[in-house]
Image 1 (cartoon, helix red, strand yellow):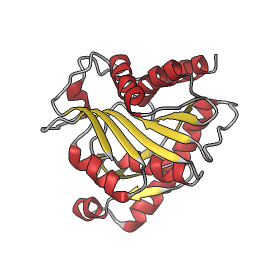
Image 2: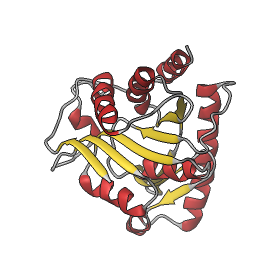
Image 3: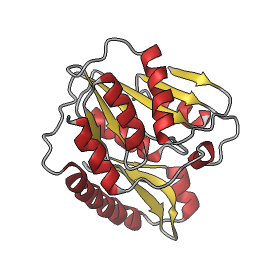
Image 4: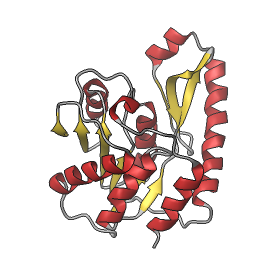
Length: 226
């Protein structure tokens, strides 16, 4: 089920504002969350400030899922899929064919990005004790979604831990990408503050959309433990 606060475009002041508006939607639609039965998972780096607003207000643990984009062979910025730190990969076969990327290239790129994801996990999370998702409500949060490749990879990774429920929570996204994830049957609920009819890029719906650096990710993770 997809639940939306507004079908009109909303321009967020920054990621903190987006997090607070998304928090309001979560509080309206999801009841009974506590630190024993739920966890918030952020997709770095931009999803971390958004997720922090939610986890701190609801007093829920904050964790990271770090899927890495798989770029096309001749255009690395053109995403044809993503892979998680555990190796769960999502590849869009239609985009794969369109990009003329070889299967051998994709196989090698999946392994390369998996290792980079693991490296970033160590840098960001350091020696934090792993959080068990089994039988919990897992809220996956990003600062927005376009094609959904990284979200799909994160969802596949979380499913391996056998959570009770998966909720995908976003400030903004196009309806077709949300419908595709809903129809996959892998998430129980999708919450999105705004679904603009015309969607070019996530950054179009923020006044300030500067890059979130690694030091901010580490800082917010550490603050979430206090």
